[in-house]
Length: 74
Image (tube, rainbow, N blue to C red; front, top):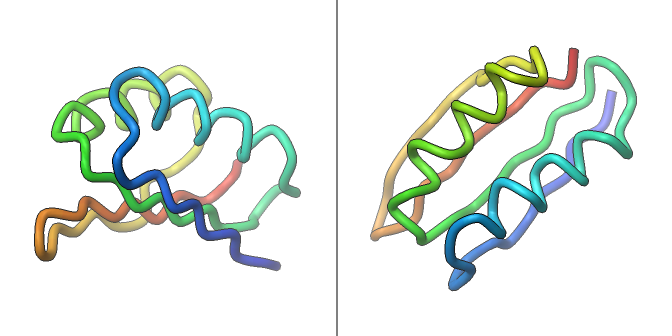
């Protein structure tokens, strides 16, 4: 099991969700993708993306204006 961190700071909708989708397509089942975003719309877009893909949001946190999503590939 591996972990990939995406620095998506400064990207605006829909780029964070698109980059997360691309990263999830490249990792193995059970791997973790960590997405760090500054776009507030990512709080809506990324959970909606995961509803479509079936991947699991393990953790979501906010610190200093950065939204961090930990996602486990199904």
